[in-house]
Length: 143
Image (cartoon, rainbow, N blue to C red; front, side, top):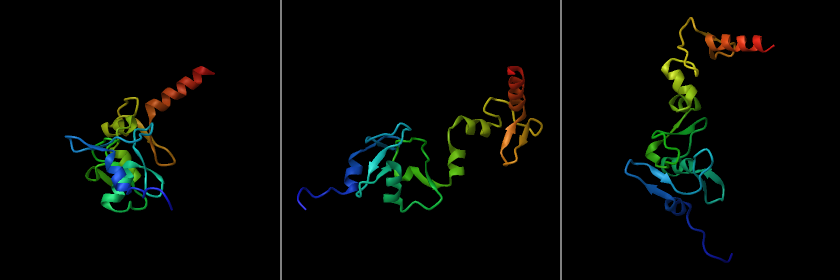
């Protein structure tokens, strides 16, 4: 086959990494709208950059796990800042408004969740009685 020899994926990868003072390796390549970096490996398969970094430096990603950014920086590809965890653990550590509210002991609308003010759905998820009552009142008055 003619043409130049393809460059190793790790060399191409590290060219797109900028190390910062806080220890993060910020990805300077392509970024998806959700804030995660994108990289094409040696097989031209497109991956999240942090997943490539984890697999390259820490070993294969265990089945049933996702890669969590311990530094909370989606552009970080420092393998020391990445951990393979279950989706449930990743969500609990996350900064989504629902998870922040849950950790604070409130629903997403700010009602304090107590045993009197919360219930359990058939699928096992908790719900806020104050929010449920508010939705029911709105539905009743809308008809």
